[in-house]
Each structure stands twice: as structure tokens, then as C-alpha cells.
Length: 273
View: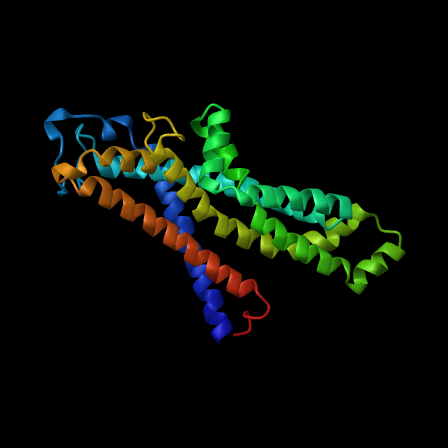
């Protein structure tokens, strides 16, 4: 019964997260530019029925800007975490294939993990001209290391199994073993890692954009909204930072909780609890 309850909770969280993200993304695309246009007559308005999140110093509706910013953050988070997870699977499987590849990939993993993620993301983004492309490349290139180590350990354990040896004796190629034996066993780690990488990617997108090294200022993003709100907090406009920030935190907590539930469900030591 507990296992069914945990599976039910995970499916419920997955459905809630999928609906939430799909709704935010759709609203971000469907909202017209006029919804977040500047209006100096409405500048600095506190939260109200007509403006639930209030307005900023330029009179732009903060709810509309927050939805559009979250849509951008979700897009960056999905693509960056997906690329990172694929890199992790390829790197982990290659590292378990030979000692030379293991030494090279382990050295690269230690090198990437020795530099703080935010600094490395800023450097890569700046080198690639900033913007969406540079930010995606920077986040994707810095978040694969932990999952790659997990994949490497899993592949080494799988390669020692008897059915792998039998497949080799039957003349099966390494590609056949990878597709039919290794990848099905790595799928749970891949999807769990993907879910756990997503909130980190969103937070790094927001932090780098907040510092001014990510998305351009004219593009609505949570990091840019929070950066602009720092100049108006001294004027008592608390809503310009608190409400968009809380919305970002809620999205991150929802995804993180979903990842933890999925990890516990797929872990053979906890799935039967």
C-alpha cells in the first residue's frame, strides 16, 4: 500500500508539474507584448485586482512579466538539463568502457567541478556572445558531472553481470549490448537526473541573468526582473522583488520535490517502503 501511495504521489506531482509548466509556457507565448508594455501613468502601483503583482517603475505589469520570464526560464531549464543529461550518459558510458577514456573523462569531470558553476557559466556565456545560446551552452556544459559519475558506476556494475558476459560469448557487439542491456537499465537514472538537473539549470539562468551576464535586458526573465527591482526596493516597492522571487521559488520547490519522489521510487532500496 505504501509503495502504491508513493507511486500515486509521484504521478500526481508529475501531472501537477507538467500542467503547471505547460500552462506557464503557454501563457508566456499567448500573452501579447502590450500586456507588459510600459505605462508611466501606472508606475509603481502596489498589488491590486487589476495588477495582482503590482507594476514596476516603468508601469509594466509584473504578473505578465513574471509569466513571460518563467516561460523563458522553463525553456532554458528543459533544454539545458536535457543536454546535460545526455552528455552525462555518454560520458559515463565512455568512462566505463576503457581505462584511457576513464582517465580523460575523470580529469575533465574534476576540472569542471573544481570551478564554481556560476563563474564557469558566466565565462562560457561571455565567450559565446551571451544571449540564449551562450547561456544554454554554459549551463549544459557545467551540470553533467555528478550524473556522469553515477552513470559510470552503474555501467561498471552492469558490465560485471552474467548476462552481459553471455551476450559477448554469443557474439553480440558492444553497440547491441549498449542498446538492449545498458540503456534500459540507465533510463531511470537518466530521467531522475533530468528532473534533478532542471531546478539547478533554472536557478543558474536566473542568477547569471541577475548579474547581467545572461539574457539581454530587453528580454523578460526572472533574473532581469529581480535585478531591476533592486533599484526600487529602497522606495518601498517590495512587491517588485518578493512576488516574482516567490513564484520562482515555488516552481523550483515543485520540481525538486518531484525529483526526490522519483529518485525514491526508482531506488530499489526504497521502492518497497
